[in-house]
Amino acid sequence: MKIALINENSQASKNTVICNALKTAAEPMGHEVINYGMYSAEDEAQLTYVQNGILAAVLLNSGAADFVVTGCGTGEGAMLALNSFPGVICGHIEHPLDAYTFSQINAGNAVALPYALGFGWGGDLNLQYIFEKLFAEEPGGGYPKERAVPEQRNKKILDSVRAAAFRPLPEILKELDPELVRGALAGKHFQEYFKRDCKDPSYLEIVSRYTK
Image (cartoon, rainbow, N blue to C red; front, top):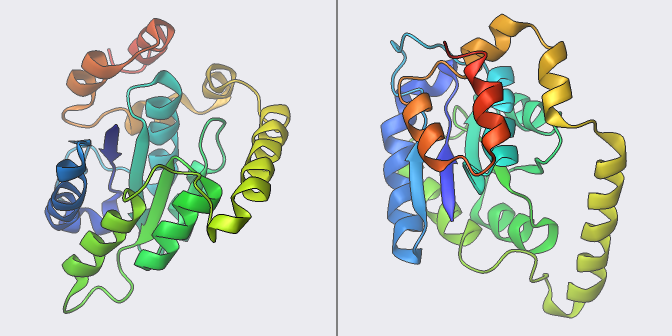
């Protein structure tokens, strides 16, 4: 599984810590972590949490990533931004138990963490434990296990409701401020990683409109 890491500007200084914790937890399980930045608070491309939502939606809908790890100061803004787009189910995660139950019950494909809350001594370990529980098992297995069947049924119902509620992402992108989208795709390594990993050729053409 390809896991994309995205940081917005208020918490960009923690990118290295977050990336190290994510790689320590996920790579031994066979997952690949792709760090889309921001890499530091001084990056030329300054992402807002709203732009995190745009970038996450492009990565997930194009197949360039299978899962997105993001966040902001509280995690709430990033979670709301990601859930504004089709093809994205983002959970708000503060603790390892949140991570495990979100994976097993909701089987989403993105998480938003509150990087400014409680990030003192041991903050890096809490991140690592969160990521370990998030990717410990195949998602959607249910918790508790005896609830697996109704939970899986509810997840299918949720997917059908979301499919009816959202328009296709390309249509949405056309109606957004082009500069907002351009900024979301302006990261230092975005074009390199996206061209390498994108599975839907139509998104290469869509993205090219904003990255010339």
